[in-house]
Each structure stands twice: as structure tokens, then as C-alpha cells.
Length: 188
Image 1 (cartoon, rainbow, N blue to C red):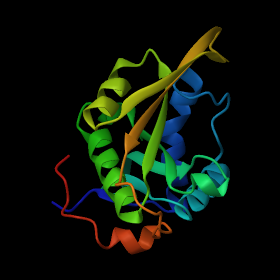
Image 2 (image 1 turned 135 degrees about the vertical axis):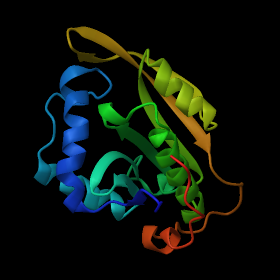
Image 3 (image 1 turned 30 degrees about the vertical axis):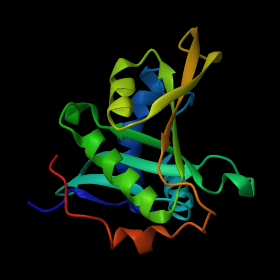
Image 4 (image 1 turned 180 degrees about the vertical axis):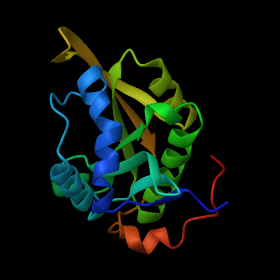
């Protein structure tokens, strides 16, 4: 079986919208109030890929999940910190897709030279907390009542993963450069 994980392209926007729209509409896991359009999602993919990987889980043209890294902040001192997210289609959950996508993403971020990966979770979210903890993330701070969605105030919690050793920072490597050096496919 071929590796279902590949680099995403803006052409995946429709599939990503299909996966993400119910999360926006029906849950507090995302603080967006309206799902992004295909045009907006394609823009997000292009912008993210200029900085860090955006990966898709593709089973014969059926995209069932995605994970990506984006800029944490724009100031130069944050250039080695990346914010990460993963989403899996409701019909494909509990198959290890999120873990495989995140594992590949983290490996690529290390190859690029990032030092820290950050994730933000709306809490409570025991499934996401367990996934992040199993990959080595640690909770580093909780923001009480940081968002209002679906008729209630919601807390968010930041999780951090140390990616690399301490040394004088070098510029991060490009996504295409590290993609060709990633390891063998992971089982899903």
C-alpha cells in the first residue's frame, strides 16, 4: 500500500473545508464562527506552505485528514516556533490518522530546524489532550473564558513540544527541502 500522507496543495481546499466545516459549526473546538470558503482555505494552505508543512491523508483521492504548521507570531524572534493543528474526518476517526499525520508533521518540523511546536486546545477535550500528551506535548498554560461559542464561555489550553537542542539558531529549512528527506511511510 502506498503512503497515504502527502504534502497538501491549494487544490485540496474543498476536502479540507468538508472536514473542517462541521467542527466550526457544531463544536467549540474551533473559535471560528463561520467555516472558511474554498478560496480562503486554499489561501491558508498556500500561506502555510511558505513557512511549514501542510500534510494531507489521502486514500485514493479521498482526503480524510490534515495537519499543518503555521507561524506562531510574526516577530523575528519567534521564527523557530510553530503552531500546529490536526483535523480528521468524522468517518475516519479512531484509525490513527491524526497520530500519523502529527508524527510526520513533527518530524518534518524538526528537519526544518524548528525548536518549539505549540498547540491550542479548547478544554475540556480529553481525546485531543491524550493525543498531544502521547506525542510529548506538555500543557503550559490555561486561559480561562478566552472565547464565547455555542452559548458558553470556553477555556483554552496551550501545549508545547520541544523539538530541538539548544544552540545558536540557524534559519529554518524549506518544506520542499525536508519533504524529500522524510522517513519511510507510517502505518495508519
